[in-house]
Image 1 (cartoon, helix red, strand yellow):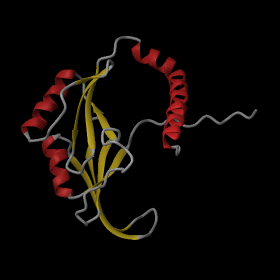
Image 2 (tube, helix red, strand yellow; image 1 turned 180 degrees about the vertical axis):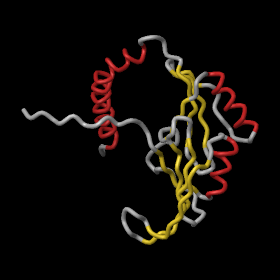
Image 3 (cartoon, helix red, strand yellow; image 1 turned 135 degrees about the horizontal axis):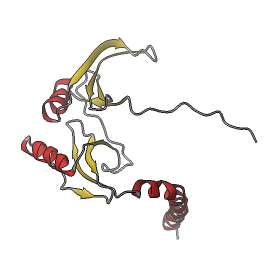
Image 4 (tube, helix red, strand yellow; image 1 turned 30 degrees about the vertical axis):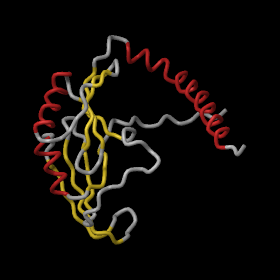
Length: 183
């Protein structure tokens, strides 16, 4: 049995990048409504990692912990398309605030600016609201409400929970296959 080398610690998120239809519309949403300052903007005609031609602007909005929401405007005015086989509630990005009162402050601000949000969703260990940005990206603003030791207990049970899901999923797939079989 070979021992795997210890990997360096992943410190956190540096940035999450998403396409946008219009850089100014996106900037206004993230900076003017959500209060995340625009801190960098780079333009190029070539993709640095591939060398392919493709004019774009890549810009960054900073969050309080030093991580970023980043966007690419490819100059086409195309709305990013959702995954055709995934419900729109699945793919989302969650950001954290200090308190449930802060979540409610954001809810009020978003609603005041014409952005539809959910009511508070109580997940037990966090309370959240959900909404979409101008590009169809679903966002969540959340605050922790976990009881002492709750997160540690969840961590202890995570592998077993995933194993139970894999078993259930196998049954779901088998049931789906039976339904699809010709009679």
